Amino acid sequence: MKGCFITIEGIEGVGKTTNLKFIQAWLEKQGIEYISTREPGGTDLGERLRELLLHGGDVSSEAELLMMFASRSQHLEKLIKPAIDQGKWVICDRFTDSTYAYQGGGRQMNLSSIESLETLVHKNVQPDLTLLLDAPVEIGRERAAKRSAADRIEAEDLAFFNRVRDMFLARAKQYDRFKVIDATQSLEDVQTNIETSLEHLLQRESV
Ligand code: T5A
Image 1 (cartoon, rainbow, N blue to C red):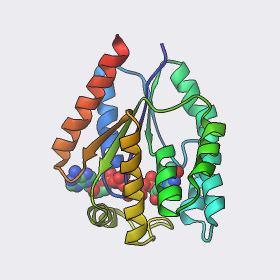
Image 2: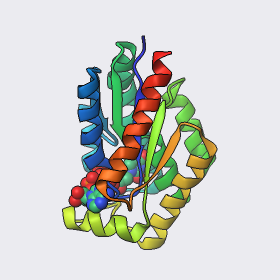
Image 3: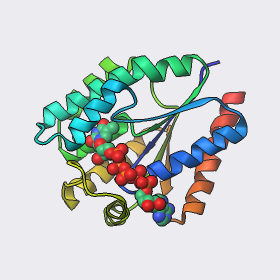
């Protein structure tokens, strides 16, 4: 049996990394084999591209888009697809919805170019469940600022991140695989919501 593919999305600071650890613990409790990974990154090549993308100085919008998909192509072929085929669950901190949100929404790049790259790179792979942690930009930025200094993308302005958030929410309306979780709740409540979504997915996969 194939494994499930779960992605976790949202603007900076909404709790993706924190809740990824919660999902790992839940999967361990269920005895489900999994890998946990992130984008950009996840492979040697992807992690080198991540460093350039986040800390590498000036990068044009088009180069940024292509680097996101170059990282994703390597990630899908070398890590994600083989794990799913072996029956492992894959949890990924950000995936292609982030490209639609940041490059499409934030940078206002042409969505049809993103769709073409998605078709080329994904082939038939899509997440089974996308957890969108949603909070106003001000809250996310405040939480992220406490954690570390801003990287190249985090240095963008409020309007940029409001467009990013709007694009995430628009995609969540469009695709059934999304579960939107109010990330302004206490961490405990957020994790109760996540657990419910994971239980539904597990039930669906067991029939
Ligand atoms: N990018 C990525 C693109 O532009 N295009 C793409 O295609 C892709 C894949 C990656 C960057 O690349 C861009 C988007 C990003 O700018 P990243 O490091 O993966 O960067 O993402 P960030 O969003 O920057 O990661 P952060 O670590 O900032 O945010 P998280 O992971 O959402 O937040 P987390 O878990 O670190 O939590 C932040 C703080 O909030 C607290 C936590 O304890 C922590 O201190 N917290 C809560 N506090 C109160 N209540 C809650 N419910 C809380 N949840 C968490």
